[in-house]
Length: 247
Image (cartoon, rainbow, N blue to C red):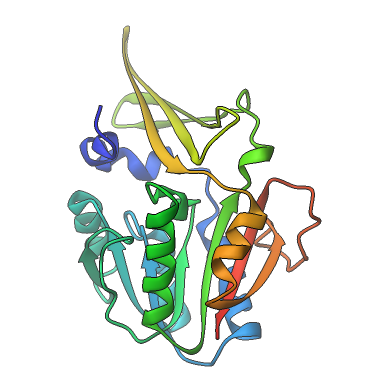
């Protein structure tokens, strides 16, 4: 199955697949980081915005928000959810971002959707160029050396008479700069069950490697992956929240 095909075909189910995500807390946490580290501007861009749940909250905070995503069906749903925002079809690694923005966000580990290190560097350069003075780039990331291939997250949801089971997990082979996000979806209606399996290739790197890439462009702050409080990264956990101020 080609990359992103599952998301395109099942865009109508995407919000159910992510039903356990606390979008409000994530958005509030990043807003606090922007208030602490950045300027008081309110021009916002959300990369890989999906159906726009984070943008819905940022618009509520008073931001002038735009979203960018590679899948038009996602953007169609985002526009219905957030008619006040603007939406752009494009690849975050290849698109020139208009700007200037005071805050650029990239939630749900989506920065890893860069296909390789060079593409990741291109994405970071694009963000830097699009940010205003003291603008903030905020995203979460996973360290490839701390990925547990056997750890999966699963939840269920009911929709229009069907029961869905969604599972996802990271996979890293132990070498190189490629990892994958593995997805499994099962839909049961009565006695009939359909299932989809998909694997999204992603760039893999350590936090040290990521900081080295960011350092020429940003003042880099790394925090624990806890949107409810601002705590410096403990240097042991494999997930972290990066807040990067343009220099």
